[in-house]
Image (tube, rainbow, N blue to C red; front, side, top):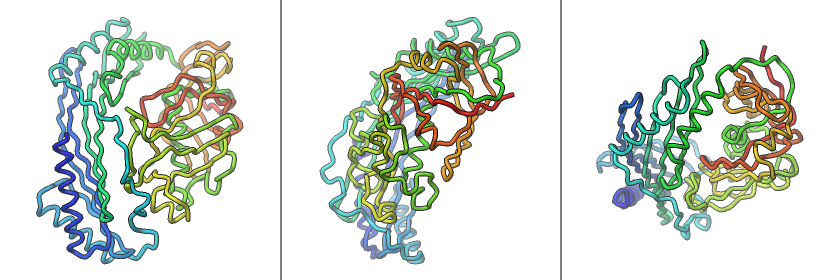
Length: 442
């Protein structure tokens, strides 16, 4: 992968030289190279094997305050020249934008640190196939009601990222990502249910074992048997940690610069105002070793840094890149391509203790659809999960909808966040207990 990185650096410098030769006042280029493979085993045999090795290049040239962009995957010299010429041609005919241009030199990550993200997995395709078959066999052996699988998938990937611009900045980093997932189907009488489990990490040594993945997938699938709908009501709701990430993802979208300057966010003009319950703290750690969202610089080449977004429930920062910061008359926060390892404060209770605190209500373990209006904060999602009474799971439920306003869900109705932090993504949070939501069913 280091050879790929060196090659990408050479291509980046060639592109910048070509842009300068054509008369660009500024230019920038983002290059990404990746390689790896994916295998899927089903019914004791290999179903698919996919290899990938590709490159992507995004070029932006500036003619004063006019800009043009082009993208390509072909790295032949003639293709690169044609793409730079195309970006230059587009720039000539676009309107001037006073906010366009590269980040300021003092914001660029010239001094960016090395991050601990690169851990190639020395597993062969044959070994991955065997591991997938073993995982499936272990899952099928868990319970006789598990009658089939949709397969066990194993993925390993190595990536190289390069950003360079005409201000003399050239930044690079390497990262890996590995994953094992298992999807099962169970049957009881005439009802069939499907569920899954997965593990993901940049270091294969941090992956859960196939025994754990198989057992979790089987338990989750069997536990859903006998699911039915609820009657329409209002009740407390707990979002299990992996679904709580999605709930908080709407907050991330609402503080993104693009949605703010387009006036398409319910958090417009909310800086230094209460957004969450007073006991909630949310920040990002972009340089977290082995973090799935870690990066030393954003897609503008700006150094990433810890940002506090929510302190004692109050919104302290938006997530801005160079362009959106200029539009909003603010400073970039190093978030041109989103947040990096968003970390949410937790309370002191486990999920089991949160269930007892809730006493009676709904535990959400899966969500469907995307009924979220980011402008108004209206929230409505199809869900399945479990009905809770006396702090214990009573029975599985499905084909219901929960609804509310994000302003209320994040604010006065957010009771507590559990200690069961899910680290399998860019948002790290525990399960979230909401005081009351509308549950629509029969």
